[in-house]
Image (cartoon, rainbow, N blue to C red; front, side, top):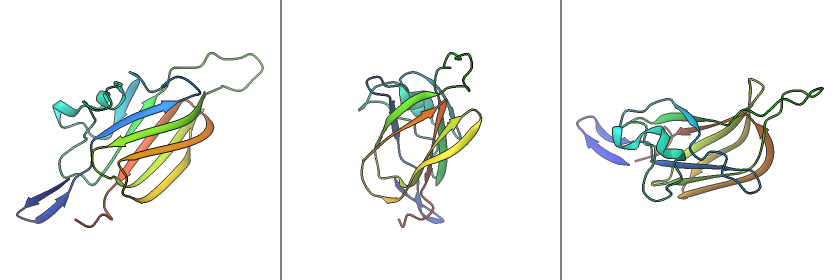
Length: 149
């Protein structure tokens, strides 16, 4: 979104709806979320994972060029003799109200964060990533600092 301020035009982050799929289930649906910012009461972070694809979204803050959101997946029961397991994440779908610019998808497994996908100059309104990974949490980072308004 672009707004005109006395300082000039300001690029704001976009509304976000996030889905995390294994083979058949949206693992993100109604899960705990941790946002970097949550300043607009009508667009709280929990709306990114409420399953409402066209009605509610997370919108971190007006005029903020960077933000992130973490989706905590349910704990996986330990298996004796094996290291801690994560959920099999096969697909992540992100729907945008406005193109996000740059974004990074990361997974957390056993307290270690690893990058799964980095996208620069994204101009689409839907990001659809596929690839099987194990995870206990997913972090989406949005960066519009390079977007020319």
